Picture: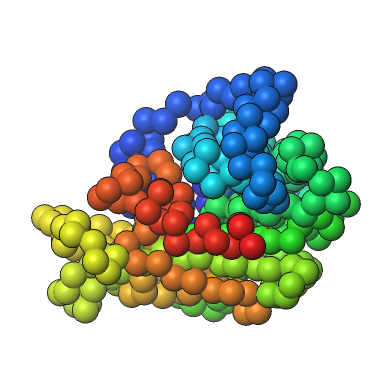
Amino acid sequence: MSCFLVPHFNFNALPDTLLRENLCSHQPLPSQRLLQCSTSASHSTSNNYRPAVILPGLGNNSGDYHKLEQTLEDKYGVPTVVAKVSRVDWLRNAAGLVDPNYWRGTLQPRPVLDWYLKRVDDAVQEAKLLAQQQDASISLIGHSAGGWLARLYMQDFELSHHVSLLLTLGTPHLPPPKGVAGVIDQTRGLLDYVEKNCSKAVYTPQLKYVCIAGRYIQGAPLWGSSNSVANAEFAVPEGEGVNMKPESGSTLRGRIVGQGYKQVCGEAEVWGDGVVPQISAHLDGALNISLDGVYHSPVGSDDELRPWYGSPSVLDQWIQHLLH
């Protein structure tokens, strides 16, 4: 099912910890959740920042974003809600297998993904309750597939007119290229639908799209020589003293990661966050940002050696978009 929504989810390229994760996240009751958010937000009531909603990526659950949620609330005073998703929820996507369009590669996101979009709508309604002003706008933070699912939500749901910022983290926005040998659209047409039917990215005072890509590891072709195999494969943030040079086996990893990249953008020898290529995570019309040394997922990440988009040192580099 990982290939059904996002073509880049390569278990061989990810840490073993991902495979050992519990299936379900355990979230507080709604009343507890509102109390926690209200208490955190009260630390910075004078800031009056718009609430944010985090949209989990494919295979992730709400609990994977708890640390990011707490940092946004406690350190920056941004009221935050995570859309409630468990790992087993993603099995609902199997409903698409009975649709003939799945096999034709022309699958449409609804009704297959209605369950996820409803969770987002619930989270947006909860975030509106946390806002200090009745007409306050909302920020959407979409991680991985959550970024293009946010675009679907903004297209079809009434409350989306409250959204003034869509910030995506490692989202594969673009459909894979057609006619490339060895590349199969594993979204089965979903990203084609998004590209053709969802509003184009803009960066205006009323609505801003900010697309953030990570440059963690360069992929390599499966066969033959490659610059990314011969040279260092890992990007180290400028000024960081972390040793992230290739170790034994890193050449093989680069080739495996490269095959995942190829399924997303048609090329293996490109930079990306270990799952999504940099070039696929940007949109024309958006404010596009690339960050060195940033890994794709909170699962298997390490704030010091393998920071992901929500790690404190990385969050510091994009938090300003939520505060203005």
